[in-house]
Image (cartoon, rainbow, N blue to C red):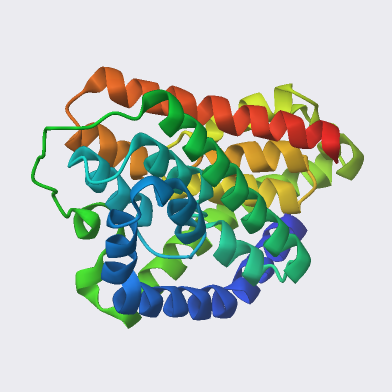
Length: 278
């Protein structure tokens, strides 16, 4: 047990510099380009799902939150909203970078999420698109829900780093215990590594409206406890606190449930397809 604790602590400490630099860059990007990105989405029109899918992969704090507000104000379509939800990476990218995952792997994941998000968004718009006469006030609650932008770039980066480091330490500790007492082969044979069932369960994890979901999914995949299809299903469904904000600012509960169901269904089906392709 002492060895497990020591290994977990050392692994977590080694990640801190990479996480901090990544979050510092993300915070800078958010402060410099956040408003510009939102304007691009607003002006996208029928190309909204494509623009949303492209911009969703950019590691920006609270972009899914902003998208939820834009949809509640009927500035963007349901297809654009889902494209952003599906393509947004939340905490996945900082963890992959800090774990020194290959550039090829990172690009494949981001490109896959972008393409799936854009295609799904166009399909949803073909089915659900309608002219909205109702325009509501768009509440900018990004700072309250996720970003803590008022803290400044440096302090916000430190806050994110410490929070995600804690999650990683907890998850790594639990995985190391399983590896120590059960073994690598048994871990690889867990239910999250099984076709169809793995993506179904990973999608449920992705629905958790918290950064912990993407942390868990990414770490499980990197540790070999989750297949690529299951990992993609969970990350596609995961939209940070976007869904939480949607239920808060959009008063049509039936519509919110429809969006949640579509997000889960698309993510899981995409994950299952990836299981059989790879």
